[in-house]
Image (tube, rainbow, N blue to C red; front, side, top):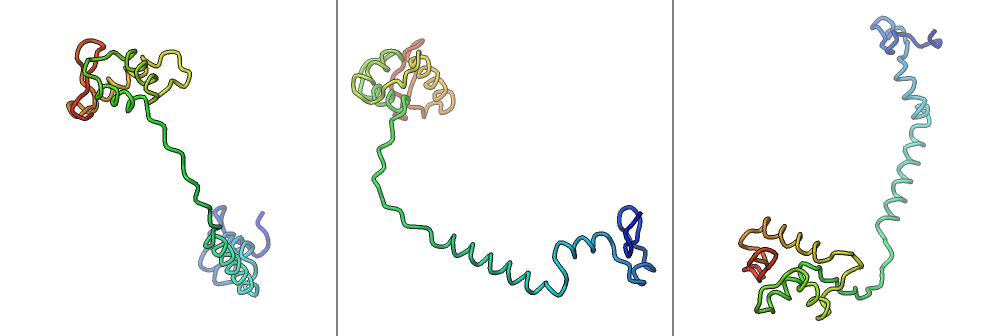
Length: 150
């Protein structure tokens, strides 16, 4: 059963003769309910405009922040290993690189059980991804030297 003054099929479509007789569709009725009556349209638009302006003004003037010096970033294990290998004249294993990095204070393990395995895997990934441009070069099985990218 449709409300009085509303005609049409289930989808709310109105035939041309019904439209000519002044029947409204359900869609038009819901639009009018959402927007308010035509008399109030100017008032509604003004209110919306005022709200937009106040939001824009709030966004436009963010409070100035004091510039504090940012602490230097931590060096990654891979970067520290590249520095250690570049300074070293002999090929090194991952475990030896970890010990040298900690001795020089370049990098310390955040508490992992096998940092040497993580470093080894990262070195292998870099060699696979960058090829000859990698910072590392495989010398023997499990032993690395500084590459061209270091």
